[in-house]
Image 1 (cartoon, rainbow, N blue to C red):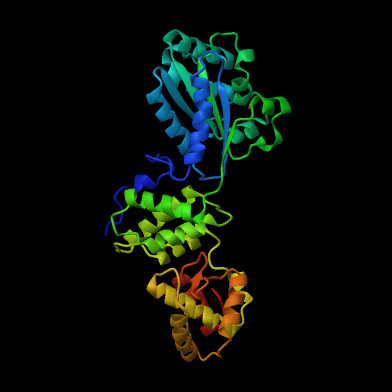
Image 2 (tube, rainbow, N blue to C red; image 1 turned 180 degrees about the vertical axis):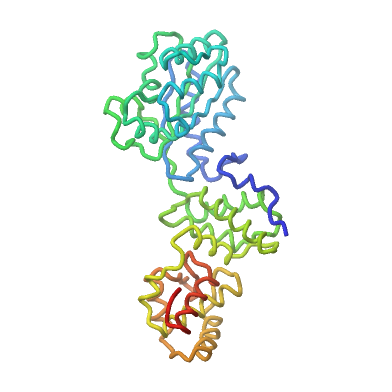
Length: 381
């Protein structure tokens, strides 16, 4: 049964209509860029957009560029992902010239000639250009700081004799504002002081963003709020720290899994399965640190969550299943509260303030199978 309306809405290449919870950063970046657009002939405004993976850096710049193209006649925004290019500046400038000024392109031109042709074309046509260089830190590290677009575009008045310079703004998108230490101090200085830092999204912000994208990508009602909450909570914690891209990947994989299993709704158990498949899986080392009788309590957690598909099992539900497991396998009882605390310390479970128990990055069905194998045969397979 179908759970998706449009899978492409979960793709990293999809640009949403709006960027939630980045209003302040958008306003700051807009004011920086407009200062260059409103003061023609002074050369480009330079700004860095800094943030972790999945923080919204690329979307912020693309949406801002599209907005400004509508506001300013003759303005073009050119987005360049520097990770795509391995041939140095020549391959980058060939792409830029062919994107903006096809008639000024020739494969025989050097990087300097291509840049001059681009500037000449912009002036002759009365156009201005706003450029976003994404993955700027990757580009610098790959070239080890030599012959970078950062050097050229922070010193256009020096590297090109052409006037006027109709490049109004240049945005450098980076995860690492120090560029791995490969830029000399003058180059870092040339970037200027304009910087917009995108802090990691909080759990609440992640929930809003994921929920909005779910509304675009999935059939209504196929993704319960509990699933959105679980994904938001998991991806807001380190090491992911608000990585929206990873959260959407989890949802895509979970949706595919639900469809393959013939269901019309996702469950938290689907998400846990995905996390186990894409992560370290069942934590065998941590399991080895639990006594045999304690493993029976964890088995009760795993079975209950696998059956319900929910994020958490209540203390009452857990104790009922635990009694059944002890009777079935003939194991002794443990002190539940202390054992649960130990499991949490080992990273096997989560505990909320109400005593409810959840599993961490592993699905209940797979964990239950491991535990049953040990408790019945004495080995974990």
